[in-house]
Image 1 (cartoon, rainbow, N blue to C red):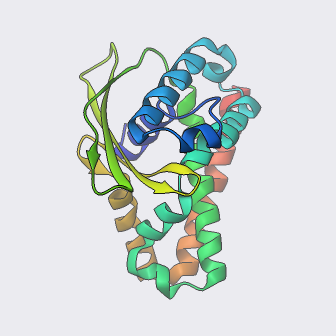
Image 2 (cartoon, one colour; image 1 turned 180 degrees about the horizontal axis):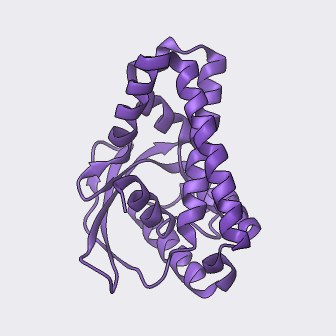
Length: 212
């Protein structure tokens, strides 16, 4: 399993279920991650439809319960790096849309793989009052524990995840290189086309898994 797939497998197993934005705004970032992590793990383990790849149920869970706690605008901007300011407003909007869709399909595909994982936590690392790394590790019966750190920032509606570290590799850095390479080769529009094509392929794969 490559690092990007592993990131999203674990992220999906570690995010949110049944927590309102109002409640999330009142919680410390480590308390938020702990609470929603356990809720999603328990739900995914108990739901045979999710584990069997029920498309509607998985997408509904991802859309309503996971995405509100991820800052896709910030993730996309960081992944695009200096090229973000070179994009038009319309291109920026489309980049966020396509990157968001890419992550939705990745979350959804990974969600059905949740089996017997448990989570352990370490002390959070604060970088000022509004930025923190929540540190944890994922433990399962298959293999060694996997380091999993969340980078969150404090927003008006609560803490939001904008980067993830698995085994020392940050998600943004993983995408930054591929974004830069594609932009250097064929520009912002070229990157958008690549993301559109990836999303179309993931959508087709997702439907095939459902019907198999």
